[in-house]
Image 1 (tube, rainbow, N blue to C red):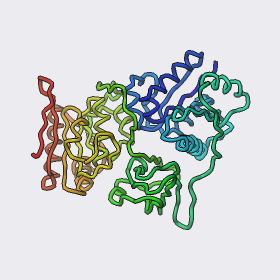
Image 2: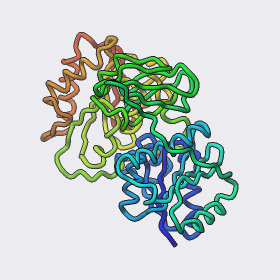
Image 3: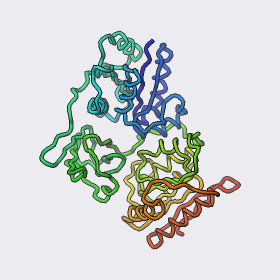
Amino acid sequence: MKTLGVLIHGPEVIDEGEAEEAIGTLKESGFELEASLGGITGKTAVLDAGLRHVIDISKDNKPSEVVYEFVESDLDFILLLNHAKTEESGLMLGEGILRYFIDRGGTKESLSFVQIEYSNRIIIPWFLKHGDGDLYRQLTGIFSDFSERAPYKLESRCKKESNLVYREIKGVHPGEKIVVNGVVVGTSAHEHTVTLVAKEGKLVKILGGTLIEHNLEKLPLMDLKGALIKTGSLIRRTKPRRIRIEKVARKGKGKKKACFFYTVENLFPKMLESDIAVAVVIGDDTTSIAGDILKRFGIPMIGITDGDADGLIEGIRSGALAEYDKFLPPDSMILRLQPERDDVIGEKIKAEIFKGGYEIELEDDIEQQVAVLKHRILDLADGDIISVLSSSVPEDGKRILAENI
């Protein structure tokens, strides 16, 4: 029987047990599968569900890039498993993935693409290659309680006028965060649609929303048409049935490294490919999200925050330093600085410790080198520090917390 490429999107379809159920049902029906996660927000969900040997999370691929790799590997019948906020946002996801796939050179004739959308249990036959009709009918039989929906027409949501680029985002709810390439750039004000406006690679306006000006410093020059854009109140709307705290085997065999991050977009592949001894992360949301990931790998972190969290992760509401306690891996430290100083100190750390790069090798006694790194960062931030939250694992295994240092 034909091997299917299974694209998993987002944590919700994993946390609800739907991805595992669908994969199991398909295998029981005789299908061979290759399953891969698209995007980064579902990776901790895969770990928590114990599915990291079933669903590939080793790469930092966008969903459209997973589709492209499947097609390149002759896996030309692809199932998208998703659990969206609404039916419309689910359809917008499928449309967006296929538009990106086509924009990077893919053709609709090269694949069959069917979306299994769990938000309201619908099946969407976006593309069906000639001769794949019987296979599709098998799938509708397997997912017999799903109603069929006609796909949206693929059309560009981007337009260019003079020196401005406009990109329309649909399926947005009022008050949701707008995230571009991992950076929270604004909040939506209107139901249904907002439009991002860029000039010369820089975001300059959000029509139907409010721009968060100081966050734009974290966003490098970009092509708005190809940017990865998400909207929502939380990056993980569902709760896992369990959380696995374990050291995950990594490929890195070289020297131990300290690595620097402004966003978590490339955190997973860096962890899997490098032997990271400590991660230095800048920004309130980046600190909480990175901590939530790093604790599953047993990797300590040094987080630089200033109290302006956008609340993208469950548990961070007021932005108080104590809220970060549960995101602290062992032997970690979080600094709370004066308002609007995390990026400034982050630049100092990058320039003076990381020499303008994103990683440095650690020599000899790694524990001692990490301690030295912490002290150097404390020295650089001196004068801006309001308080410090730290964790260690002494012999009795209990966490030691220190605040208001």
